Length: 418
Image 1 (cartoon, rainbow, N blue to C red):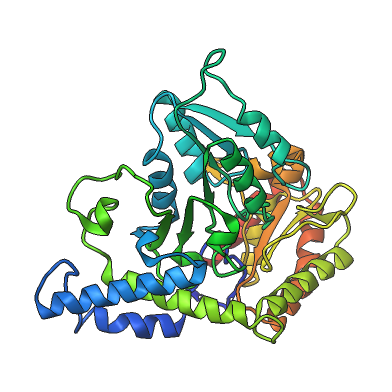
Image 2: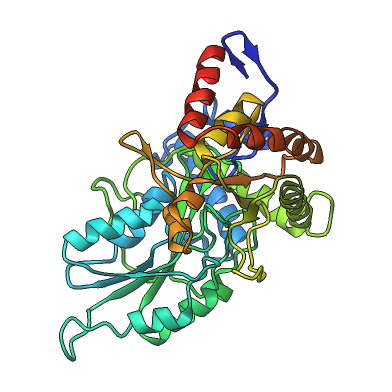
């Protein structure tokens, strides 16, 4: 990547933000930009070729998560799918039960629904980032007034956390919800293509995936909606996607998503091989162990207070570096050609601590001192070696500066190289 006259071979460890398009996916998409460009709603031959490509992609995605193709709704990505799940079902007087550790697509949707008259219940998590079944059972006892319960209740709990990679017990939580007569949605954006997803085993009613988290193009996603579930569309227009998502289909994007789903299914089936999920988890573990051994006053976010094991997706490590501003460390590593994430959002010029880590009981200082390393199947041992070679010095240097000076110093260096 070229920035001014500053050239580096980049090491990308921010796959939970987005992933690069695989060459095989681009090759599959290419004809649908040029030769096979038809509108899938047209009845002539070019249009019907487009329709066949859309339906083939629908089958590939359905095969990845083990559902009926007709239960797949193509969308523009995870945010739209989450919004369609929540706003498509809930009305004033209904209840939404969700958690404090969700992606902002669900958090902000919950806040908006609350203003529209939906009763929103927010669940906390334990120190590992796990939502308990007991907390969900208690929330499901909610009454609008004595003896009066909401007409409809929807539970929305993410499958894998985007910051820590912690996996929730979705099958158990969905079972509890169904026992109480509630519907269940899971945002599986960070689980798609990383761990097996089996709809019958999970027992969920709605499930969200985003293409760009699994080497498909940006601007693609799906909502699984169980057969028979009635959704109000977010938009008004044509009868596309069985009247659930109007608008001419993004033909090249959908084809790319279908091909990425095929490749993800094959990769998940290669567990135990050098290229499978177990290999990726081993690479992630080596990264964590190397950091903790080389850098003092560090730890992994997502384990229990006594180091208890917790299930995580195989690619994600969230590590705190005490006495370091996470944003400054992100910049320091970027200057060395390594892309990682602080997992925090910038608001009004101030770095806010991660809402996920705060919900897990961390202090604001520790939350701000945490970095997310999210690998993909394209990362190598050499990438981890490079990180471990430059990280200890970067942390040591920053710890010699005050928190304010950490950011100012690194920003000046970045500006000088721009």
